[in-house]
Length: 236
Image (cartoon, rainbow, N blue to C red; front, side, top):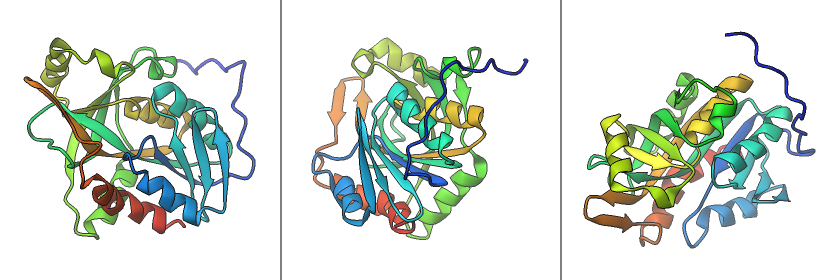
């Protein structure tokens, strides 16, 4: 395969938010504990059309920008500003019994059922994280004594079209969970030559007999603080 064709339009950097590390947090629990904690320590912030940037001393937090198109749009500009690694701290729905509500899934593989990654790799559907960044992520959490579950996810643009046959198809391909961003984040990172890793908290379960929602689970804020805050605090 030859060199990719250059784009006519190039991403502008976000001035004042040039950091090597991006902590990408697509969503929060209903009480927004993570955003509130980030607001307390941020040196500056910037509103985006579908999210917000928070500048920490050693990282920039990309908060919001749910879905592959919004994620990649913002990350492109952060990479243009010098970002070298993206740590995604997000949520996923469980497709199988081994991933239970509030489990922490370290993504080992992401398959694309979204439309953004194909603009970077038209003939590919499978993307993987950076090994060393994923290993570093795991070490950070194991040092806290937190359990982790390695697993594969499929990323979709249409969460309200997760039908029984759709679920079965991705289960047959070995997928443990579903989210809306990871495959596109991995594709972009590979294309731009930066590192990426993804940690996803299981926020809901897609079962044969229905949908078990967990975003409002009373322990969700506690779980998010346990798993997400170590990455924020060490870069504050």
